[in-house]
Amino acid sequence: MLRFHLTTHVSLRQAIENVTPERTGNVIELVSAFTKALGNRDEPIGLAGLNPHAGENRLFGDEDADILVAAVAAARKKGINVHGPIPADALIPAAVKGKWNMVIAYYHDQGHAPFKAVSGDDGVNITVGLPVVRVSVDHGTAFDIAGQGIAREASLVLSLRRAAQLAPGWDVVWWTAQQ
Image (cartoon, rainbow, N blue to C red):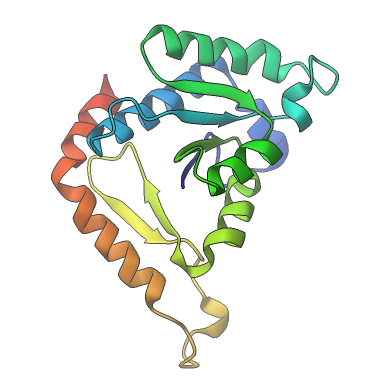
């Protein structure tokens, strides 16, 4: 499962403020460009809802109905195979079972926590939308164990392999993201 975030290292309050039709649409288009660069022209993209139960018909907030539904509709008019908003507690388990390979989460912990629970040290952070391939381990800096000889290198090795795999088609991702 590849997961993307609408927001990353910001407070939850800021993440909610950052949910706009434009930002959501831009991320959907960036994910679509990334899937095409990987050779998956019509890869379905699952978009998590922001609120519990994706708002449940405005019972838990209006953002899903007012912002996310509109962004999905606009992207689908452009031919992007995106679906949602889907409640995150349904979307992520379905992705783990293989229904979704591409998932967009709205804030850091909505996407990272389940991914790390499933993937452990096998996660790679890929920053999409830059002119160069930028990957990193998904577990953070590990400063707390630096110099103790107990750190594992598996995620670093996997990150390097992913960078090598992505490099040949990266100009397509970058160019499409700029359009």
